[in-house]
Image (cartoon, rainbow, N blue to C red; front, side, top):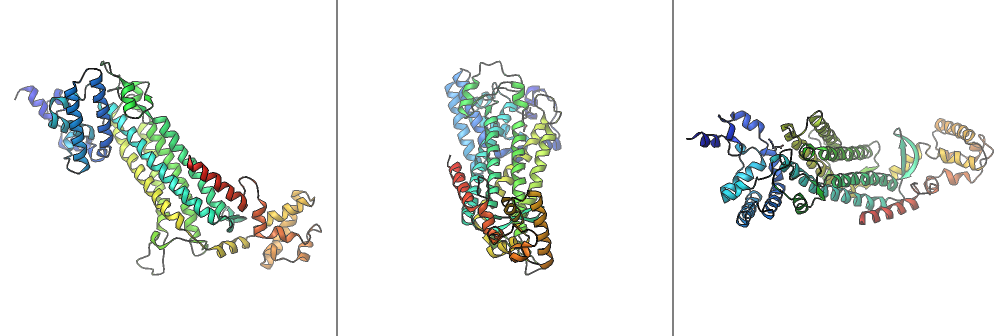
Length: 467
Ligand code: ARG
């Protein structure tokens, strides 16, 4: 074997300057094909665009281009049908596909890599992949939001205690509470949309780091791949993973929101609260305690938040202090990223299926709201309307509550005479404000818990989802 032939046997893609085989363990250790093969469609799309561009500028002949396009189509089919033989020796998705292309179409396949590098190739692939996944994520967020709106509409008048410090604070409607969830998700969806808009630039053409000496047309490949424009700086193009960090940050915030919703579902479905019931199909039992019905779905979503937050920290740490431009470290971006995508989609799917099926125990919610002197603020506001300064009103109500606590009765259950001992401004009309319905109905301004406002908020929300 000539020297040249021997080196080709080392690795067809880069073996020229090597004199011995890669260590078998190192080959497996450095390979990414096991996980980056999920980007095969994006890799093929990038190659198609690149090949068309090379033909357009006269570097590839028409015959070569059609051979490449035909080969890529066949490869895409082989992979989709599970017939493609992935090889660890070919390291990653890019070299697996390129090597197979050369097997299929010969020299034309070898010409495809003109004027590009795996560095700009992988940067392009990840962007294409994430851009698409964020479409799916945003669609699932909308599906969950729609479910929330349906339940909120149904429960626009259902009274429950609103909490601060997990102590009964003031009555709210369940619909109002759910609309708080809606708002959290609305911001989450817009964070993903912002991330998509910012990342939609094409790194293709940055090549290894400095660009290429061929007269490439980056505008053309950017357009072909649905990017808004080419990226501005070749070094930045191959080293930037901000978009992945941003995606993970948006995901971490989303999951943090979902963990809060989960926690509420867990608490509300406990025997002590018993505000809601989750249908059996979203729960599991215990192998030892026959009476148990556990809220596994929200518990698991709460738990998965830790893993998604962890991925964000992984990526931040991965990029911290990395010198420009590309470093092999970057291969480590994929597993956290992919697992974030899978986890977020899984959690959203479970929630979007489960939330519309929540069963409300209205009596229990109402009784709980009656127990914590939830209308104490309403009594204070009543006294203020009768010209007592707020601080004095606060004092009067505090004394009335103390009596209620001693007697084990709500403010609305004290007699007029009992209430009047604390202030002569209290009259028979006080019972209107001490009722839970009166209390929620009085909070009738934008953002307030009055059923009328909740319905208006739902109508605005439905409209916002149309666009
Ligand atoms: N598998 C590599 C990655 O995921 C592709 C880029 C490799 N580039 C290189 N020069 N080794 O980052």
